[in-house]
Every structure is written in structure tokens, then in C-alpha cells.
Amino acid sequence: MPLYTADALILRTYKLGEADRIVVFFTRDRGKKRGVAKGARRARSRFVGALEPLTEARVAYFEKERRELVGLNYAETVRSPMAHVTEDDALGYVGYFAELLDEWAQEADADERLYRLGTSMLGALAGGAPVEPLARYFEYWLLRLQGVYPEAKGTLSQQAAAFLAASRTVAPDRIGDVPVDRRTLRELEQLHRGLIAMHLEKTLKSDRVLRELRRHS
Image 1: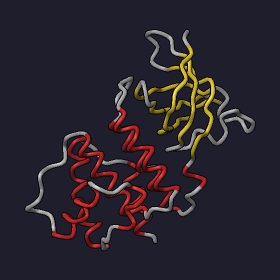
Image 2 (image 1 turned 180 degrees about the vertical axis):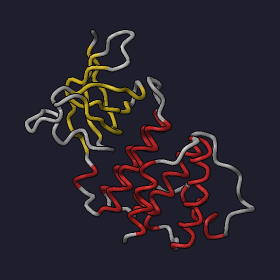
Image 3 (image 1 turned 135 degrees about the horizontal axis):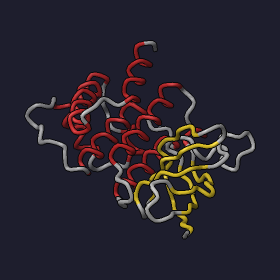
Image 4 (image 1 turned 45 degrees about the vertical axis):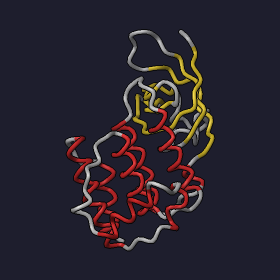
């Protein structure tokens, strides 16, 4: 079995047996992978802290032909959102970004632009970018990269159109410099939510969590 090393974004994990985890991770050079991290749930596991959603990690894994799951050998944290995000709503957005990447990333299909979009979200969170404008920025670029963002010039408010125009020219860690009010963010949220649900044919679990957090804030 060949051993591969790669830069990766951790997208999600599932419990497996008494001590292991299944890890979904998105590599820069070979697309999305699913692997078993043996002993990952043990207190002294070598994976401790490296398998949180949206963590950028250096991973090594074994891949056997015709096997759906790879064997994750190690994961070393490069950057973690948990070092910069503590509020419940911000943590909810970390899960939201990771779930969207998971839904759009393709198995074993490299997508450099999508990978860079994901790492740029991590950098923006680390830089203290406001999470709601950042989420609208991320949704916009994700839908654009996938070629499913409509020409909506006639249906958007002037403020929403201005925010999207600015989003095409600023880096995500500077999105806080773009003036936008809560009403405009809600307008774009509704538009993007509808587009995402239409193309995925479902509502994201993390989106429901965010709405529930908002109701109780």
C-alpha cells in the first residue's frame, strides 16, 4: 500500500467502534478522502486536536486499491479555528463552512480553487473577520465557483448588489471593511440558502443549528 502525504482540511468525523473515527478530509492534490483514524477517540491519541472541523492539517494515509476507506496514519495541525473562535455562533459557522465544503468537494477529485477558498475562510476567522458577512462572502464564492450563481441584478437591493461587487475584489480577511447592514445580510442569506437547498436538494444540518442559535441569542 502506498503512503501519501498531503495538505488537507478536516471536514467531519464519525465514531467507529469503541476507539476509532472515520475522518472525511479534503486534500489539496487528490480531492476528498474518507479514512479510518485508529485510536482517535482515546485520550492519548496521536490525533488529539487535529481532527476538528475546518482544521488545516498535514496528513499521511495509506490507500489500497478498490478500498473505499483509506488508513489515516497521522494528522498534524497546521492551523485550527478552535485557537481563534470561542463564541457558540462563531463555532456554528465553522461547522457550516466545513459542511458546505464537504457537500461540494468531490471524492478523489482535486479542486485547487475550492481548497483555497476553504483555507481562506480559516485565515479570515483567525484574523477576526465578522462571521455573518464572512458567511455571505463564502456562500457567494462557493456558488460562483460551481457555476450556479444566477444573474440577479434586477432582484437584489442596491445594498446587496454593492456587497457582492465588493466581495469580488476584497480578500475574505478584509470583508469586515465592507459596509453592510443586518437587513442586507438577511436578504443575501435567504437568496443563498435557497440556491444551496435547490442544488443540494436538502437543508444543511449546520444551517438549522445556526438558525436555532440565532433564535436563542
